[in-house]
Length: 548
Figure 1 (cartoon, rainbow, N blue to C red):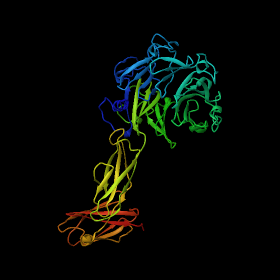
Figure 2 (figure 1 turned 120 degrees about the vertical axis):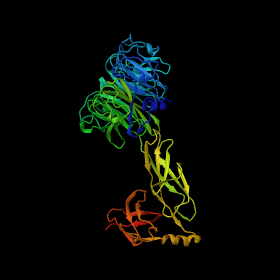
Figure 3 (figure 1 turned 60 degrees about the vertical axis):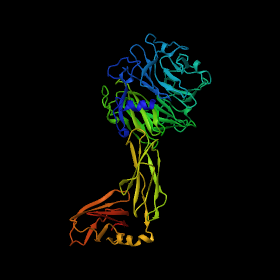
Figure 4 (figure 1 turned 90 degrees about the vertical axis):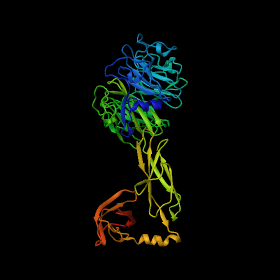
């Protein structure tokens, strides 16, 4: 249900229909530029937030955000019905307290970062108190790492007895193990589901390029100031380093490399939060540039949301995400609404809002094939479209030389004419109707006359003549290429994809016998169709074999 909620919220006021192909941005929590704390028990769009600084989403789609609050920081939750509540934090308690009891009664010195595991547990880092705490599915809070004393110790032993220093960014793997940036110790540490702590990356020292450990084991690398972590299902970790302005990758075999910002080239203002979708696209919270960036598996870095110009309020809602004003975004999380549709949620901190962008994260492809491509007159043919990455319920439109034909189904059966050129357009509707469309290859159908139709076919072929055929784009037509009484006819030429490549209007009378068409150098080699429209419509195929 949360998937429907996120999509509904994202298109604005629960009813506004928008195309997500352009990646539209909207607000799903917070309704004023003024910081405050109110709205619990009501719609998240009516709530007032106070500088939200972290965001995560569990497997059921519940959204968790750290709200700085008026008296103390709080953990707020937006459930599947869009209702916001506070689930942790107490206005009267600003020091560590409450373990073993309901999280709503617990005290925190600070709240720094969030993570959720596959079991529904929510983790909160408390940087100033040097602890990481967990809220289980029953709402009970406990400490899972850190003894409250800054320092470095405890590897190989119980995490709750370890010294850690200013823990921030966190992530989990599919098994439920927790990873966190032990920022004061320049390390990434791991806490297993059984509660044992170890060092996952970092040797405890800061570094500058090229001396950061790329190409070697992560435990020997420099983790200068880790501000973002995310783990892929395959066990690859991505790391944002705010001081080095880089995104790094730790492969499942422990080898570390830099994938954005190698050799110290600065491509970010301040990379912080990270999120990863099911296609391997990495979303990067660029805090000081007021943008969300996207890094594709093919290595392309581009803007996903935010114009780079900060501005108070919800400026840009309902419009293209890259034109909107974000102000110090300080957290990014996502959920797959459908196989190829993702909702990216952004903690728009200085605007006191949570924004969302719903977008396709893959482009469909489609290939069509025919049951047979050469048939006799009157024989039916079935064409089948096979799409990939087209979503759960794609739509289909078949074309013959660019003219819509057939029903909107993955197959099309009909009786062809000689020279028909069939294509199919598939539209991915996972996000919204008309989001992403792609055209297929084309199939040419050849019809061989049966003995009874030879005379008729011969008459059709002698109605008019196009010559030479094949040609180089220079050709003539003669014979009965227009009808008695025609004053003007239209000549149109279509390529094999059904695209019109030439059109002219020709005045005719009984004195006109031939007409020349000179497209030398304008037509690529291939098969084309000439359609002459007057009182009657006549057509023929020809082949361009080359240009002179």
